[in-house]
Image 1 (cartoon, rainbow, N blue to C red):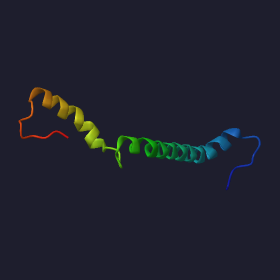
Image 2: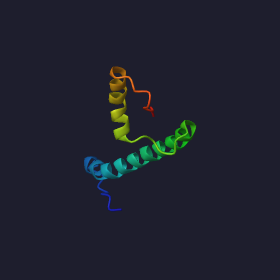
Image 3: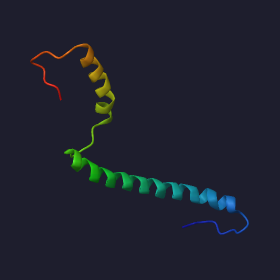
Image 4: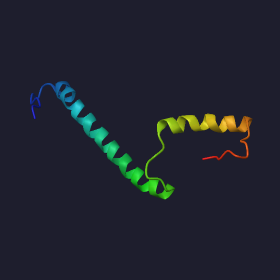
Length: 77
């Protein structure tokens, strides 16, 4: 890699290493999240996590159901 080797300028070295360190940090986080999903989702009986839209709309759906009880022919998820 083209890392600066000037001993007198540690700030320049930090600046050049910052993007590389951030990339490695994000990779570690993503790997940990993948491992966590692999452990938790089978316990929940799901293959894939719920989508962001499903997570966002579920509270609104529950609140609506509290105001308007479902008809006998409706089925709840």
